[in-house]
Amino acid sequence: MNYSEEDFKGMEKMRVEGRIWKFGDDVDTDVIIPARYLNVSAEAELAKNCFADIRPDFATDVAAGDILVAGKNFGCGSSREHAPLAIKAAGIRVIIAESFARIFYRNAFNIGLPLLESVEASQGLSDGEKAVVDLASGRIEGGGDTFQAKPIPDFMAQLIAAGGLVAYVRKVKVAG
Amino acid sequence: MPMTITEKILAAHAGLDRVSPGDLIEAKVDVALANDITAPLAIKVFNEIGTEEVFDTDRVVLVADHFVPNKDIASAQQVKLVREFARSQGLKNYFEGGESGIEHVILPEKGLVLPGQLIIGADSHTCTYGALGAFSTGVGSTDLGAVMATGEIWLKVPPTILLRYEGSLRPHVGGKDLILHTIGLLGVEGALYCAMEFSGSVIRNLPMHQRFTMSNMAIEAGGKNGIIAPDETTLAYVAGRTSARFEIFKSDPDAGYDRVIDIDVNQIEPQVAFPHLPSNVRPVSTAGGVTIDQVVIGSCTNGWLEDLRDAARVLKGRKVSAGLRLIVMPGSPLIYKMAMQEGILETFLDAGAVIGPPCCGPCLGGHMGILASGERAVATTNRNFIGRMGHPESEVYLTNPVVAAASAVLGRIGGPDEL
Ligand code: SF4
Image 1 (tube, rainbow over the protein chains, first blue to last red):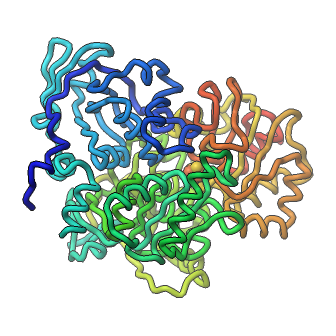
Image 2 (cartoon, helix red, strand yellow; image 1 turned 90 degrees about the vertical axis):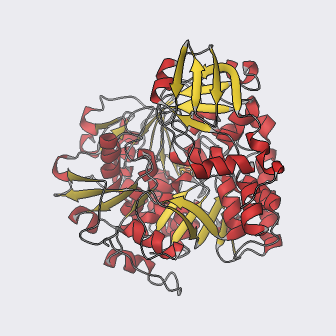
Image 3 (tube, each protein chain N blue to C red; image 1 turned 120 degrees about the vertical axis):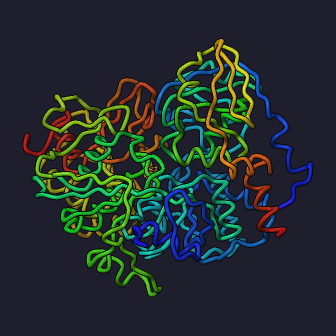
């Protein structure tokens, strides 16, 4: 498949630089966006209530380009895509964690929110610090250290490059 | 080359002779499912993709079950959007109102999900149908929108964990306790990305509704699917529900497993999952008399007719503890009706229960049974995360229906032996 420049829209922000928001292990989608806020699906509305129960300052203080760092099994629980959508719409450009729950992992790449897995970075980075992330190589700088995350798998990189699953399916399945 | 049941179903749907764990495949989907929370986003994605029609009007199933009967204007708008989409696409299987119940109860009940199928749902508990010997897994709305358009999905073939249950079940121990015990053993990410295959003589003797309960909670260990090989129990359940043809797959005896875990059920007591993780389990005898404000019996985990029968047996001739709210929600209209005909609903009412409509209700903290700060509930549901059933400072304890009923009478967590 041949990409045109248009296809790389999603990759133009290969370098992410921002403040770290740090969370622990097993952060589930119920706390990312509580069910009582799921009676709407508009992204901006969802972003307003992101982490409402466990980190009320997140939605008000997060800035575009910030970085979310978490421990193990981030995004477990319900399949609600509202969770990665809320995080993305809030301004987060990449999530770094020790591991991700399966459905969350698919959802995030499908909507063009890249994820990086690194145990060292997850443990070495602290809340409130600045970090610089190179999505293509998985290199993370922060807290006076450099970490190397697992590179994003080829197929996921294609999804991000295409601008998410919708663009990918349009290109490969529909157009043909 | 020997394969597991999961690998065989995936290979068959990808048009391949064999697949191995780690392979990325494009598979044909038999059933695509979404609900009133996930469908609106999936429909948006479907529209963005730009195909005019869904891949098959028989195979896209939409169920309004989470915030119904519509709890507020915003949810009414969401359901309206789904309803109009279903109409304009001519979907055969859109369920709302008196035709609707909890998706994972009504799909098996109506014979819409069958052994050997590949089922994709925009709901994490889509793994429930693994109990029928199908490959069934949850995805998000974007995936589902793409499936509605193309009838296909990309999947990574998971490694399989074989769980073998042997021994004799103790009184009041069933599928819910086996799966809670297993999640406690593995942890909430113990089966991450993996297929869980439930087997052994205990599973072969387990009735269908308890198999559904086990597969339902595979996701709570991080599993991609939770599958049980079809046998006579499966075929007896499916018989009369469909005229469609289906295929039976079974694991080869020498199939390759990532891990094999043997579980001796002789020692397993009824389990209680303490807040705030389903893996935080203890035997009921050590639950320490936690006092409770509410008991919820229902959900896609334990909203089956047999679950209501089990709870009603405990409640017969008894009253719920003073000041405690018991909420019973049958999983489907059919279950509701049968429970009525059997006199079970009367038993619940006499005991002091509120009986809700067949829907998700308080399970996800949606409506009809929300907890205030500091309140504690025992629930037969599947999740007890922070704020799952209401206020972030409320607590949910997960049990089987018998323990839930006994706890309602006791006003604290306890088993039926304490009554
Ligand atoms: S009953 Fe609970 S777990 Fe099951 S589908 Fe409804 S909200 Fe989800």
